[in-house]
Length: 416
Ligand code: EPZ
Image (cartoon, rainbow, N blue to C red; front, side, top):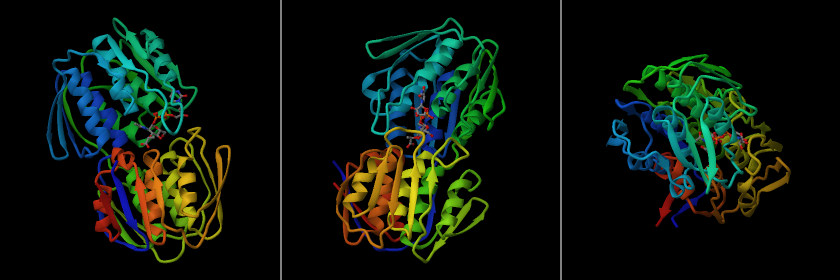
């Protein structure tokens, strides 16, 4: 198990380039299944979830070429319509092959993802949507077995806003016979990026960015080239780190327009933020002020930034409330932050954090992707050395994070 050793106390200064978004790249990689032509992708981040998804697609028969951040995918000859349990259990996003496989090949066998650290993560809305489009779906031996001669357009209302649910059904609808309307659809920027890629492939989608998507199915989709959007959660993570540690950092190849809520909260915490084009500059010279956050679907405060703001509040001036409304168990970082001396009380989905002047370094353990980011931020500001264990969680969603942080002046190294 690899670990990170962090010496706290350094301010962060300098430039950091933001990588392509994991949560846009993963559905877009699956979109390659919708056509026999080649899909050319740029700005694909180098992280383990992307590698896992490529492996899954290759074992189905997708030919994949890699050249740095450029990936070409060709699903001309698919000979396996299955996503096996051993791959799905390590990366839930594998569920995103379900819609494309049923839409183009009329069949799919995808393992139920099962739960993960942050919650039970059901996929009932994905399945209900496919059934509404005429698919026969059976759950047997832990697998979703879906079949349809040809999916038919349908009107689907999401009881809950679901990011991958919206993405799965948007991809399925792209090749269905007739018009599909997705109501109460997710508006996350990653859903928008997928829609733009599908439109480049010839899909007919209206209402992109709104909570009602109207997709008119076509018979075939063709190849395209698409550049993956910048990762707004990686951006937010670095900005929170600099707000906590102090300093002056500039994000490049970033997008501020999809981070408004996060930037507003950092401003409230006392950071000075300047945006120009694709750069975001943040300067922080004093102790941050505590900020309340409440997670909700986009454009409200993102659940993927909740753990990072909790770390910030641990050393902020004053007390703050953090309310997690999306996942039922996304406070796994609390007990690890307490090991560093944080004062956090949890009542259901609400945490109250009383900021303390100083955290003490200690050995702690990552439990899920964004929790591990929050532990790294806490380690950057804790006195002495913090060892973060099980950082494979971190490697799933951040590209070379310790190299990027070291380049900003953090004292952080990976222990083999
Ligand atoms: C996506 O997960 C992201 N993952 C998550 O990012 C992110 O936290 C989440 O959206 C919310 O923004 C990817 O895009 C690969 P949901 P997803 O379906 O799609 C319930 C990270 O750290 N629900 O929007 O799985 C569900 O239990 C990861 O990068 C159902 O009940 O999340 C949750 O309470 C973590 N039935 C809520 O909806 C369903 O069929 C939102 O889940 C689907 C979801």
